Image 1 (cartoon, rainbow over the protein chains, first blue to last red):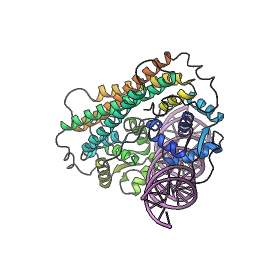
Image 2 (tube, chains in turn yellow, blue, green, purple):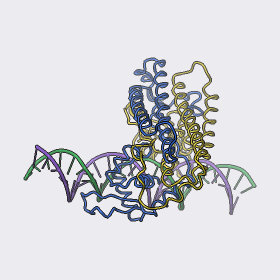
Image 3 (tube, helix red, strand yellow):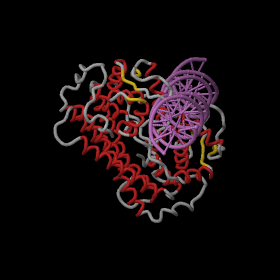
Image 4 (cartoon, protein in one colour):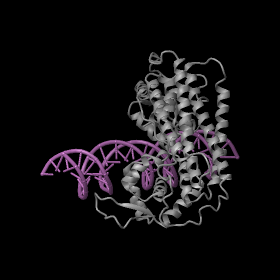
Length: 204
Length: 204
DNA sequence: TCTAGCATGTAAATCGTTACATGATTAA
DNA sequence: TTAATCATGTAACGATTTACATGCTAGA
């Protein structure tokens, strides 16, 4: 329900072709709403036939040829409507947390290396965001649009900060856990033991 | 690719029927991997025909009748395999951040109220997590399984803490932004203005 | 018996991912 | 002219969501 609106936002910021949009979704907008080029082309087709955007008249509609789009008033109205409407926050879905929960039952073999790898990835992302912040949002007065964009960037920075800290804690925990490569490999098959604090307990 | 493994984890913690799983996914496991009952029933069918789980022999296989499942050795092996395998972190997708970014272009009308509502929801969730923490993870030594589960719960607590803080910042920002109900309503339709710092800028 | 709630499902539509296909442009 | 790259798509499949259908059980 959000991809068309992500595309409308990107096109309002600058009219673009499908591939240009794809590239911009790898940066910028894509930092909080990712999309592949197939999704983007499909959605551009829908938005065009729905009357929300149109191809710039300068470009020919041939197959291998560049085709840029701009937002029509109906598209802007739809985006404004969608932005104003109340929406439920989507529940969290995180594979790493699920894996950790599973590893409490079937053993922690292999997961520590991936925790380290994820830590490095999140540190990289954090550094990239901080670079953008220094370059595009110097301290001092700024226009309301820029304050809003900075707010969004700060969410990214704070989220990556959270992950790097939490993954750090997790790795510390593993150091105190004994040899992780061997744990729980012995207790095999058979019905689950009813560990105390099992279902009332730990979640994220 | 993760729902079957979430179900295997839940069933290892305690054999359950479809509806019981659904309820447990509303708490516990569902805090970081949500699922509806339709997803769960379909996946239970697949896992059963794949030989990963089996219905407990005590229950009859009639339609409106309760049917509990337990994990077979193949299911435990598959879960251990999946847990150990390296996986890419999934890129962030957050509607509220997208809406804020859009509101920098089409105006902030309506969004402030929803920011407040989300703040209240995240505060509630945080309180719930902290209650679980106090009840199930008192300070002191604990078994490795419980330390892992606590780690996952701490991720939930820290994430909700992040959201409440960030939403607080966002609302402060709106107070300094002037009257949010009117902003940008005047600048209508027409091609987008090329604001400086547009595409190099804000993301998260 | 009727109703409400428990429990297990089916069906259809949309979204997301992966793999592949096709045409245009440019440089060796 | 060939190959590489840019650019726009198609096809197929699996995951997710929403709405609905069916059968059991217990209490009024």
